[in-house]
Image (cartoon, rainbow, N blue to C red; front, side):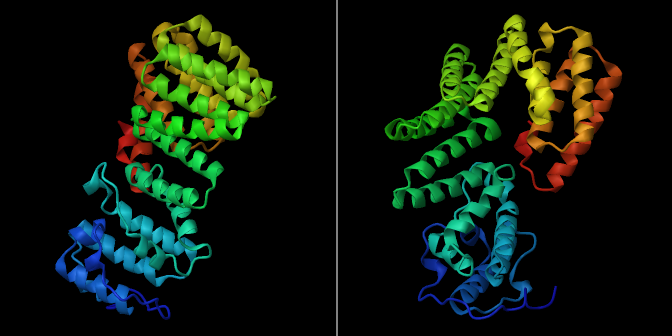
Length: 360
């Protein structure tokens, strides 16, 4: 990299203040004094800093350096990608704390982007599986814009989006429940029965992860009724898929098989992704299954993995469940192979920046 961090790309919007007046700016507050000076000069005067201003051993200095790079670009994807790098470089230092970027700085970074800060925040949703705790902060910021614009539909979707982040990614379903209730209030007010069903499904899954099985079953079955009433077959099937997991968790194999038999023919014909999820859920019931069926389910999922590309979160869950099942049945060869595949997957995803908490 040359002495100047990046080529200066045109004239920058000037501000009458420096960021020393900001009350909360995560990377800036924790960076070195030389990095602060470099950022202040760049932000207020458009002066590209020397790379020697940043201590490479300090993750917050590197974060500021990446924000400078974001501020020098005019292409939306480049601005967003550099900002994502700025957040990821100090993600592990923050744990569950948010990464705060002042609104003025967000506007500065997104000044050359069409739709400005709104598009910028939408782009940061790629942090969902990379830095989920930090992503939650940007979801809240985006929701505030929806609320300021009196956009109730997108406000409700935002509540559910954040709830699913806590429930299904971070593993804190208790945090999801009040958000789901806030979304439900909006859908009831607007009379959107399909979204009411979707939100009940989300609540049922959060309750399932809290081991509140009776409440979860009630929510999911009510959602099925609403989906059926509105002739939304996909919604109904996805809820019946949820019931497969629920009854796998409660140790009710007959009920689990009942809903498996409803879902499987449709998934085998039209949806290999949901078939993969169905098999993963069946593996969660390994303690009440027979060894032969576990082998067959695992083989089908291995074949599906070879033939298609699924979201990493789905694949991680499959390996977790299959490894537990193989340990239970003392399947030494399958266990060895799956552990090796899982370890390779884990290393690859960590290199890509996926959140380490996904593997716990």
